[in-house]
Image (cartoon, rainbow, N blue to C red; front, side):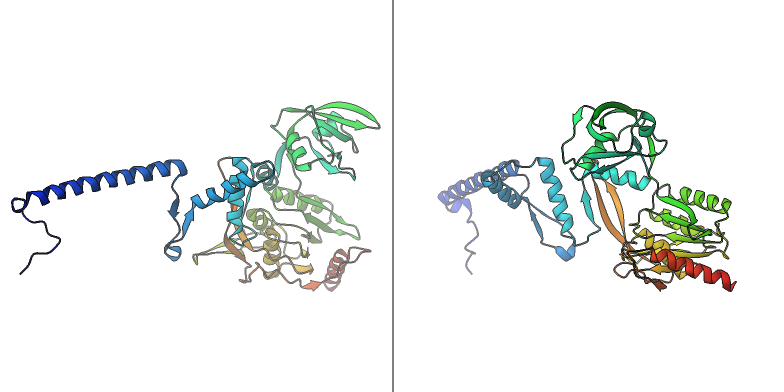
Length: 413
């Protein structure tokens, strides 16, 4: 029976072999230590070159940061022109990664547009109370809101804005950038230099909290007993505006029936749409929200409707009626509380959570989808109107059809 060739014979049998063994072991330890040290130095230079990410289904996928560094190194060496800042590179990397999800409603936005978006959703911001538009030359033209800080300070419609706090505006101007310059903390002042009838004027305006209207209303032109209510978007002040609309129209005796105009409404806050639906529904489901894990949430109307059931309702919709506007239209249609008149709606029925990041930027992430009370899918489907109407270049065919339907309804009663 022979001994294994990998075993070490007793040292007393061969002293020379034992010495060779110790020398080899010592050499191996030195090589190992040098290898570990080299790896740590390399990682210190380049960062960890790879990380395993994801779950079991994508096991083995590697995010190779060294590959990115390699590619960007080539760009730095070869690109003819100014290179973007590290911040812009980071934003670009986030934006590109999110775009790879192939979901148009999951996206990244930088700090300044994220602030404007939040202001639109809240319906309030610190500003001067003026509309800004660009003329054909790209100059900023001011149009002050009635009884708001700009108008009270002396800004007039048609004034050309030349500078903000001493900073000259480029022509053509970047309207978003100018808006950011004008908005600020409530109570602070902004100095505007404007041109009026060839003369330059310096006007200081104190910023105030400006509410961005989302609802407008009036008695219908061709039937003053019908209340017309237009909802531009669903924001944090939509429900209180809607309550005021109902009160004013009732006082004006324009409450025999109502026309709710949602044409071009891109959506907004879900809770605001549900709150408006509450005014027309006596309890029951308004919206079903289904999540990817199979769970669902149901939104219910309050037990008592504000608008009596005998008040007929027509909802005007078109191809740009989307998201929360489709929630309201779908709920009133499914519950038999309104007639939808117009065109098929947009079909945006997915829900996004808005996550504010540490530097003020934001990321929208789709996490669920909406369904009407009768479990009809909105996303990618849209809502079919009860009465289809083709737009007319000469008159408001949607409004005319709505008034015809309400007139017939009134005669039948």
